[in-house]
Image (cartoon, rainbow, N blue to C red; front, side, top):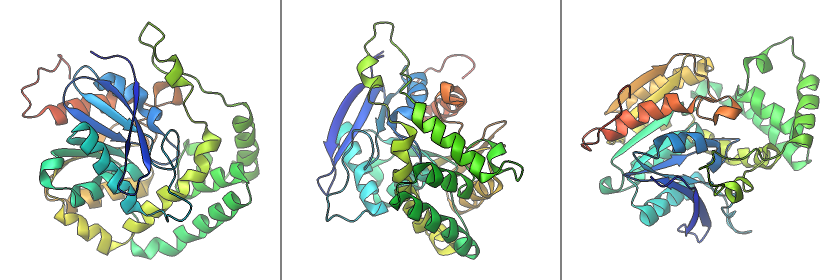
Length: 319
């Protein structure tokens, strides 16, 4: 098994450089991270899958090793769908696992790509809101955008976490004032350092570890994740997913916010070939690396089982 993360690049339809990390051997799986994440946020998950699959972990456009759209090139979710197609063309990978906004991109890719390009997809808690909640979402989004423009990244991060109900449940407590969240976030950003990757016992991942993004670098990129979610907001957008013919595994955690649990249920109802699995004790940060509080092996077990169907692959006992 290849135990080293290799950095590779390809170019999307509009010429934007898309960088991705590759590890493992076997059928290809593209892992699309969500908001406030980057490619290496799922290093542990990829390492767990690497004995059965070749994993491709892209830095989605505008962050990490991937390029940003050109000065006169407006961002749209469709450009990220094009990025997925570019990674498929470079790798031949036919399986995709998407997390949060990356899950929405995965569903969009399944709608857009020729059937021969995508065999199966798995998604974890794609965020969806009904039209009746648009106004409430736009209020915190406007505040987040203004704070980013002013360079108030700690405040913007708190606004995004509260609005999207991310992070530990204590963040949503009325007894934990916003000012305390902003101050603690500022301190975290000031002292944050890259913490490395799973080692292959030969130190070969050291250079890759230095490419790990810091939280402060990710805060401004969340505006793209917001655009993806807004593009899917409303019942009409939800209904459009009924055209997804790809076999789909939908994963959701029992400790995730109620709106995400609702999203999982509604998308499961609409997709013609879906299976829904509820993960006990898992919240929206479940796919993160272990050191970030994630439970990657829980997801690896479900993904191995789902992506191995019909591949005549022997799974270890307990998988």
